[in-house]
Image 1 (cartoon, rainbow, N blue to C red):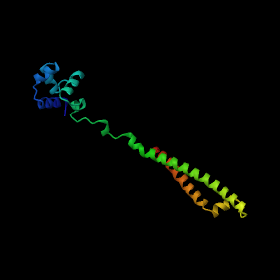
Image 2 (tube, helix red, strand yellow):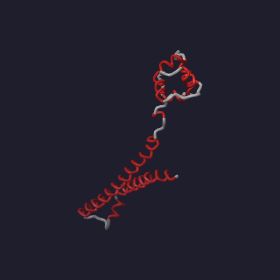
Image 3 (cartoon, rainbow, N blue to C red):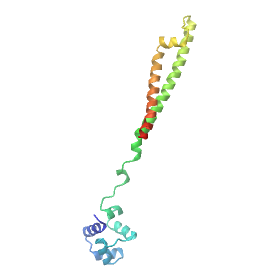
Image 4 (cartoon, rainbow, N blue to C red):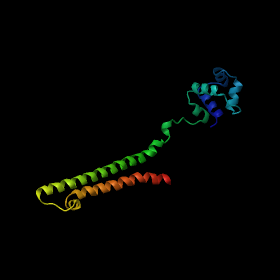
Length: 161
């Protein structure tokens, strides 16, 4: 719908003649007629006055389509929120993996010192890792590290495409 058709429709819906509209805007009836025929366009001040007079947005007045506010458009934040969440989860998993590895090392040394005090011991720390539940902690740490690294690298690979 053109501006002229829009103006004519709005004017008629509000029960105004071209002369009455012209008087309210402070222009000639011929000016309103030219606008409705799309032979001329009003200046920006008149567009603003018409928009206020008929209580429509300038966008709706000029295009004939209802005004769409910013909320009706997809937001870029929504598109990147999945990537951001993936990065945060990846970083947390890497951190958890590192903490588990450090704790496993301390636990193995601590178990070795306890066995030394009781009189039974193994020759090195790796034997403790195989004979005690510390190996499960190391396995969890490895899974956390690998998953976290994968999640951190994955968004970068998708951006290259």
